[in-house]
Image (cartoon, rainbow, N blue to C red; front, top):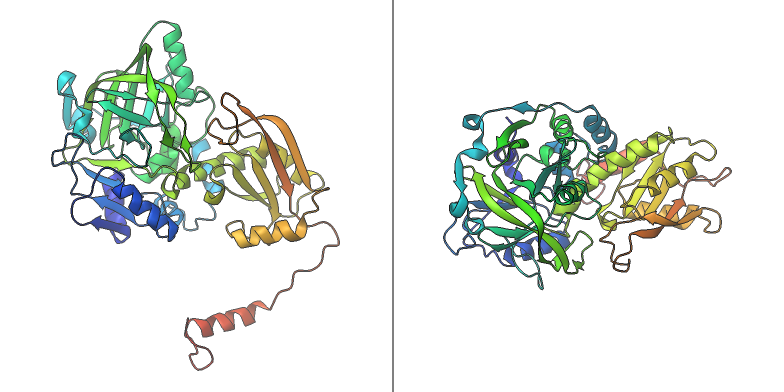
Length: 463
């Protein structure tokens, strides 16, 4: 049975158990910033923390769970983190239907509090950055459903804890959850919503798959997990909203028509503080959790949050582009470009195929810059990508710019209220007659590599 604690046990060598008390305000996030700057990505587990009420918490905190691309790929059963795009695309498209369990077989419902006893202050929710107004849920998967079809949707969306039983919830205006919310409010009805926190990284990635509307994420999560995802009816909403039975915490409530509140500023994946917005206010009526629950937090704006969603984007872009460009062999969405850059790799592309591919990728809302290279360029090496841009691009010939395409509402260069942007595609593949790359024989490279690794210490100092 795959869950968060199974993952932590299997990868205990990557877990740092933090000694001593850890403050909820800024301290844990500061540690993640320092580790990010050093390109170190251990999983951080803080067991000695207080909750929002100031009491010693029986809920611990785990963060940096997906900061390492290599570890996240291993969690999915992928031996090479450079080959996730095709794997992710095929797994999410195939899918595996979930299985339903009863409450007595659902660890996430071991403890149930309702009404006045349901308090968000019992959780160790972090305040991450300066100028943020308070503690935010950053890894809460908001689950709603389309009132017309009954089909559910799940997405990670931020929530500012404002009181023991109220929090804001910011579903981005173009998100499927926002569409579901608007449909309920158009009927004059409160929108039912459940927020689940903490699970195996394969489930976290599966529920971030980019799907059509309306389409449930549960099959995609099962596909990525490689087994049916165990679901249980939520306590408050019943079978209308199912939640993962092996999650750590579930928060259930209602977003009523007209109930809104200021939200933000908040540190976004762009690395900047997003401005204040008006967001729905959720009334909390039920909280369920494991007896020894682990609260999962994403470091907003750092690799911890970027890696899993970028992998999901790679799978989506692979599916989109492969349909028009069979020569595509790989896709990478680098964390250096946040979620705005995409790199495409080709093997023997035909005439016009690369340009077709660039346009197909540019149609994806989040992407602003798309660069196409061939197999001899390492998509995962910034040095190699800059070399390709410097030596294979004639800017007057190899660049496509398109205005008026859909963009991300979080793009800091866009004026408030603007949802379209300009995008660029760059063909950094070689033209016919291009010079041959200067290389050395593979057998000599292997021989010298053996010297460097200490295989022949008399020839070269060990590095």
